Image (cartoon, rainbow, N blue to C red; front, side):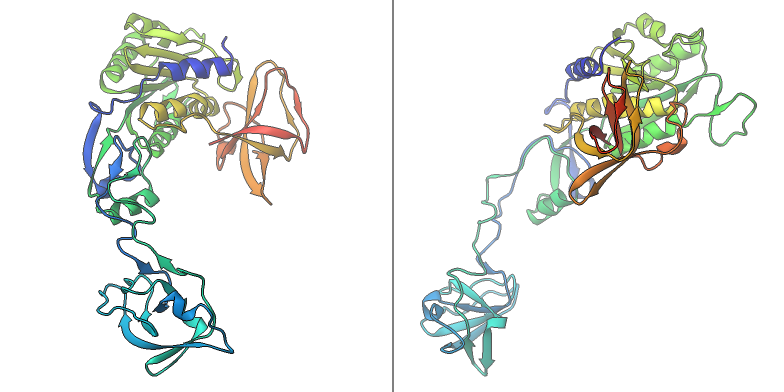
Length: 407
């Protein structure tokens, strides 16, 4: 049985990211949300596009107002008004100013903006009541970004801030990695879909829906292949189909040591190489990881909590790395203070699910109430962290620092 860290290393070493030449597509800006950039982006625009004002006020020559005060204001002639979107028509000379608004182009000759709150206007003259700093409230052309340089690097996920940058830079088509295809199937004669009435001994297949949701959140395309009966031939056909259509295959159930757990022998019969059969963790011990050339197969445990914990711990970083993300694909662990006593038998690395809260700048971990059984999915609701009790450790006291996997 492998340690958690060894299992993580094996899995991430198996992942070969998508190719930045072969596995890309060109998409419109409106379709780029949650995608991964396959190549860096440049723009032919400077940011700002021109020298402009960062404040409503008056564009002036600093030399004319450097000694201004309420007792001895500098009085200037207003020769122009410059709204945003208009081109200045005049050049500011000694003793002159232009009324200017936020975002408006600076007129030639001016090098400073005095905010209107520090002025007093009368007809076509303005009194400067306080000396500004040199170049105050002046945004210089290309001070944020210079045309032709890298605007966004390859390997990043595009979200709202990046979309705003791309739109402003008039980058209307982007090269992104194709979406990963993740096949999902559930095994077990006892399983039924949520729309079917339950018979004695049956269980609703929640894993299919939970895993599909997690896959979607990561920007990949889930292929929901449904429930597959615990029959060797049926399983063989379903797994072979999944391998032929997806980059990653997730099955839940059928990877333990029961009489009806056929997944591993089927994987081997189909030419798969099994790298992991069990991991020293709780929940999630029966985890199978196999490869078919460049394709990854994860045989997750059937119990709902076990399936989700193993996904968060191992599958999520594998999907991130495979998708083309340049960095940040490893699991994110945070230090937190435990607000409850946490216990383990110490035999395996144990994951306790619950809520991670930021209180006065310090993370606190509050375990979910009730039974933390691998079959209890009810208290998984609103979980956003998994506290880690290391192998050999049996007790985390109230107020003790603990490592938490942020999910």
